[in-house]
Image 1 (spheres, rainbow, N blue to C red):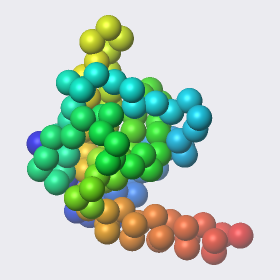
Image 2 (tube, rainbow, N blue to C red):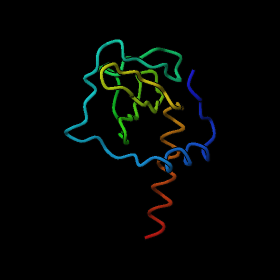
Image 3 (cartoon, rainbow, N blue to C red):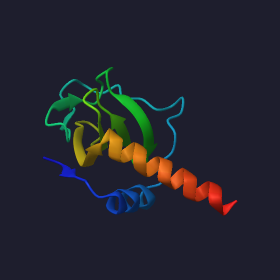
Image 4 (cartoon, rainbow, N blue to C red):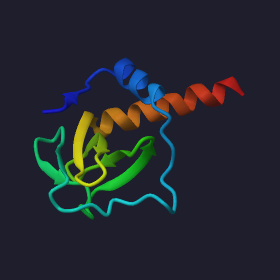
Length: 111
């Protein structure tokens, strides 16, 4: 089971520690079906699942996914010939949205 983040401060720290960017045209989740991870929602998702929405990416080969059960999962895919996915942390979509809105508001006050 991945670490489930329930605290806004901890989630802010995790998000700021990674250089998360928007997905780009090179972003791909074309991995074999066996490349799967355990999400905070309690289900196992394959990285290539079309119902997962990519919120962001980070290097090396990390994805911020929104699952259909309203959980956000930060997943690291490792390996060259054989890949494995590991969910580093997960949180509810509501907590994620609250934190992103709070960060956006804090940023807009700086300018």
